[in-house]
Length: 87
Length: 145
Image 1 (cartoon, rainbow over the protein chains, first blue to last red):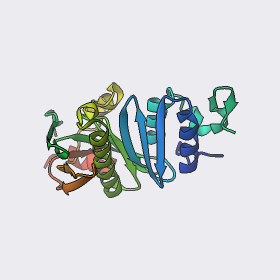
Image 2 (cartoon, each protein chain N blue to C red):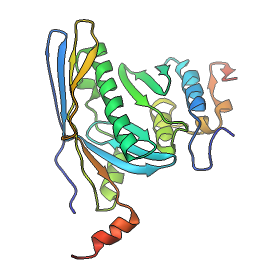
Image 3 (cartoon, each protein chain N blue to C red):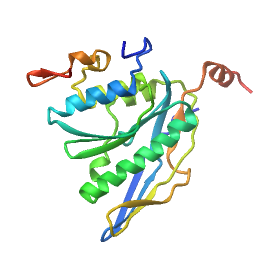
């Protein structure tokens, strides 16, 4: 299981989902350790993440960058880009 | 205890590639979250998390400064950063328990000739960190002196 019952998600999974979602071209995603930089619509945002990533931050990422689909972070196998999947 | 209603002020001045940015009285809502704490900027939609209150404050400050840096590098201004949090965050803020704590910070940044930004001042005196009281603290607040 990639997430805890309290809703937090392993940092590696969050990065994985964001990297796959970035392939849609709707935003760019850069990682430097726990420092992630997302640029969407020309607006950069730099966030220092914990490991695991708490439920609220997961929800924020889902709302801002994943069309509100928080389930992607809890079930990363669901993330689909084009005709492929994250795996 | 009343809620602070005054909004934030953002200042940006530059001479060529040298920038100075100040953010004054930015309201930041702190709330306990899974795995630690979560901070949500209200006047400016920026968030951070941390294992404890000190860490979430530090992560907010550091991440916010780096975000300002990125805006200055990409756009030469912070105008696009000046967007408030969404309605849900404000709703939660206004419906939260009465008790709040405050601390603050000012940010000043300048750009050098290599387009990087250095923080020249980071005192804790203008961003207001507002934190929900624990149930024990709320009970104590409810008891008249």
